[in-house]
Image 1: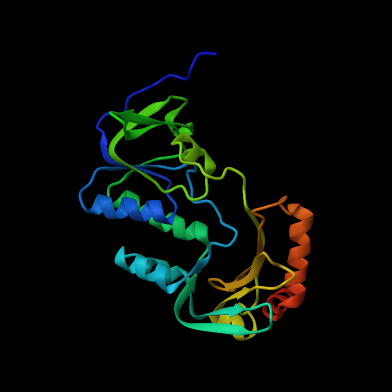
Image 2: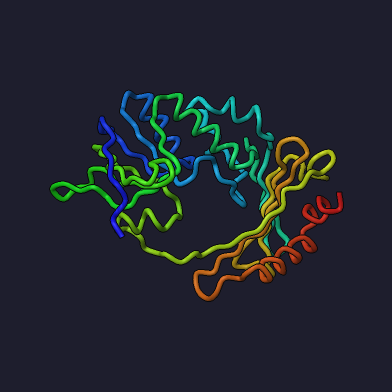
Length: 267
């Protein structure tokens, strides 16, 4: 079978950003505003949903403020005044400050739009197929995907920035993959609750650690309007993943044993 056709993209970039999640998009915004020629690629055309990506801490809000994006984000987000961490022994730690909650897909969409507005070129969906190298250094990447219409395109850049999170394929492509197998799994429900999250949880991001969930946790994140994100996550660095049945069991334990989650479900 012949290899897919290759085509050239004119005009090499100063920076090639691989991955347009929050880190990659923030880098693309900052570099493009500073006058660098930026090309960004991502495996999806739109911002994908994340199971537990809604919570925005004070650090995240400060980073958005530095980008000039805290206003647009907070106009859509649910503002919260604390983070509550519930321990397995029944104790609770409360961190007061500026927090917010916004569906991750919406946050990513705002960041991607700002990257384009700042002048970054965006090519999606496509993924890197191999690094471009010269004299022992990376000078960009060969990329392919629906956005390239089947062609393998060389994207040359002075600097290549990988902002791919836990995605294994780009890391393997560049020869820096340390762990290929998934090591965490999660499940969540996004509910419409009349009046929003019930009780004291209205103004808090709540995280629950419990012996029944370890090594993992559950969360209740009040969202914009009347939405609430309820979910559980589990880590399995050793052993087999929990599967759907295992996640369902963890979910039922969490929903039954954590009062804010039970109250939201009753509502």
